[in-house]
Image (cartoon, rainbow, N blue to C red; front, side):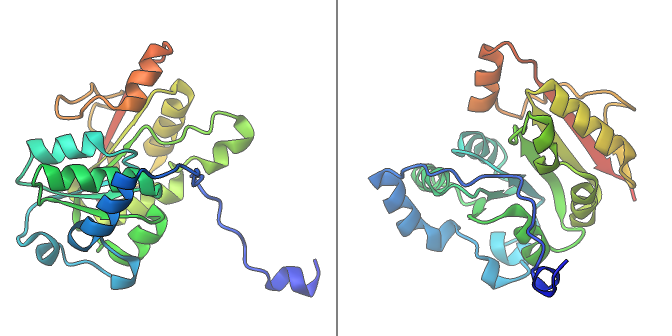
Length: 232
């Protein structure tokens, strides 16, 4: 290896691709007008949730909320909780902000950043009641499995951010990814499967059916939920 190669930083393997989705005028306007109310910035550093939401309510973090429909519905159903969404695609962020404004929701905040960076720079240890990861990119080709976000290191990153008794809730419509999630989480230190060892959880009533879930079901896919609780 040359000296130049030794000095070059290792490129982080990304679990997502920022797709070139065009924003509508309404999404652009919603993003611009409502970001000061709902937006959170990496540059602000570690969050104080009591300052963000005005009290010590339980906080749910959703990674990759897509167009935001299910996150809006959960926030509407559970006004006593605070919801922080992370999404890298601006059209989805713009649409969610428009709906949050129109529905008068004050218990949602949003990052438009890489979740790994948000977790490292902005989320205090032991602070979250739940982390949600619903229908992440399955990276179905075997050579791309290293890009799947659910990996041993990621599980331990989340465990640090969850309070004792907090949960990591995953859902996917790809059976192979469900098996991968189960394998990773079964081996993850400090967690307990809420449904019992090796078992998948039934879909909770409070988890809305997402666009990705409907699409998968229309293609004949099953749906698998996994809920793991931090015990240590």
